[in-house]
Length: 182
Image 1 (cartoon, rainbow, N blue to C red):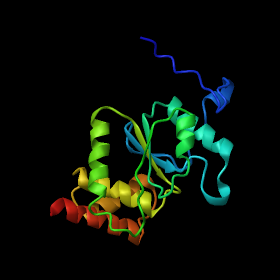
Image 2 (image 1 turned 180 degrees about the horizontal axis):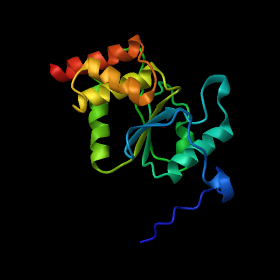
Image 3 (image 1 turned 90 degrees about the vertical axis):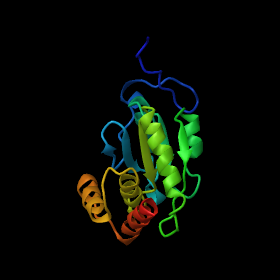
Image 4 (image 1 turned 30 degrees about the vertical axis):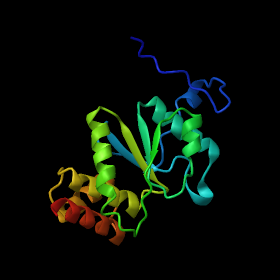
């Protein structure tokens, strides 16, 4: 069996060498479950700070570091074609900040749990590591039973990701907890 990673190519199929072939770590990259589930900012950044070359380098880094799939929570389809161009499998699972996600999030969480059980390495992103991502992570921890309740989940997520959960994130965690309990 050959453990050598596939050669890195740019969007035109030309081989890349040196540090470019390694890519760069996506901004705000953090492990939620070590070596299994991570979060980050949208590859390439968002809004005015988005850069095409940075996006490419970050996607290359994800691919070169053994991630099996990117899960985009962004409501729009930004970046999705770039994942295809660079050979990075992805899922688009849009999550809105203040939407009623109670019925939809458990389906997404079950899908993620199944992929993790198969041994896949996943990275989840939104435009930024904001209340959407923090609430999503907290909801996942509650849904899977890794953390028992809402207050404990808020504490765990805030410590793990070194960010404070705002009202939208807390509401998302509470909604998932209610869905799991009911």
